[in-house]
Length: 320
Ligand code: MTE
View (tube, rainbow, N blue to C red):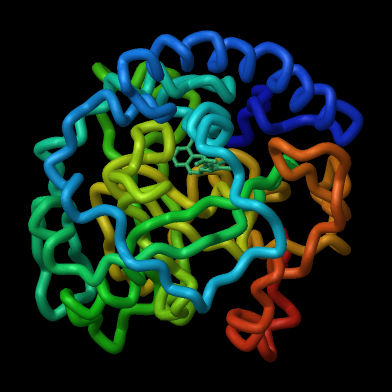
């Protein structure tokens, strides 16, 4: 059943810029208003900083210099306060609401078609994984973009722990489900929990990154603490937040937005300036914190890493 309800990022192209300017005027000012007070207390911009995180000593991790940007890193005061996290509301300003998310204890389940199914406590996982920092571009289907210093580990390293069976063709990921702390999950017309998926080949690509930190610190809640995905060659909705379960499966999973509107938000969702969203162009993007728009790049500029994943797949709607 197709549920036609307006989503926060479901906007006409003509509205995209005004919405962002609206954010700039109102939300940045709002955030800016509380920052001096936090600074006076010696608290850094991210709201997450106000909380003691048991993994703090693991940060900052060493930067992997293989991942370079063609733009400045977007200031944290912007990226931490301009988010899509529907569990906490449909606006971009969910950072405060997301603080109600309890990220300890947090257990990640790995199951399905694996030799070694397991439940891992997040702090055990963090100690076991080789953490590194990567500078990644991040491009929302809505046409805004950012550049973020994520910390984390390759998704492939996580899968190696569980040893996928030969019959595993896809990786299905799921967000927590807790209607008490996440008011958005009381909106019954959404197919909670949030689900996303990759092919096993995509998941094995070095760019597919499990994020546990940002800006040299444990991940703030608005970014999807304590564990989110970053697949920077795809539109941002593929980068699922606050993951509790990773399942190896034989059938292609139906993701959250695909379930709601498959004609607009498909399984592949690879960035392509030449393939418009049905209701707006993808030719250009607005990098938050900068003025003007710049050309969108195919695979968001990561073609050298990922184009090979899609050879002989011309029949698939790779850019939808
Ligand atoms: N993951 C969950 N669980 N819930 C969400 O609403 N939104 C997606 C993605 N992951 C979303 C999610 C969308 S639409 C985008 S663009 C990115 O998260 C936004 O990530 P950011 O807020 O860190 O920029």
